[in-house]
Amino acid sequence: MDVNERLEKLEQRLQVVEDTEKIREVLARYGFNADLGRSTDWVGVWKENGVYDLGPEHKPTGHDGLLYDVITSKGHKSIENHSQHTVVNHFIRIDGDKAWAEAYSIVFVKEGDGYKPWTCGYNHFEFERQGDGWLLTLRYRRPVGGDEWGGKVIKAYLSE
Image (cartoon, rainbow, N blue to C red):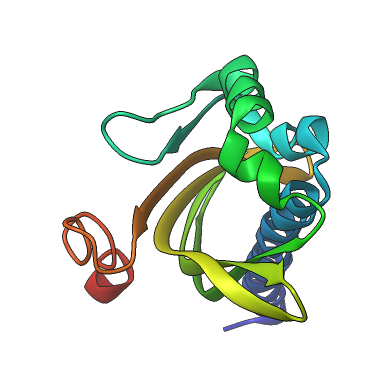
């Protein structure tokens, strides 16, 4: 392999690393904005036609639907400013201008002098490149141990 080929491969690998970090940042901004009640900033990490699939009966779609859902959710409003949205154990894969990630999510809530888990879920996220960054197009979330646990989720990374 000559120097030009090596340089091209190195640039490709560096692009994947940079894209992976940008996607981690999207997930961090998602959580911080949710915790602080910054609803419009939270919606800003989504593509205009993004879908948050929380189950057959609950799929807010598009910026207006997502914003309406987070603003009117009594559950979410009750934890803002004393919660910590945490996404852990990321599997992030880049494929050109599209990417996916799978991860656990836990929302911790302050209760008295301590903290306790409020929700625990498994997530499949999909992203599209937008300029120099990435936006969410889909978040598919199911509770840990639920009916779809290990069915529609927890499998993309296993097939690699």
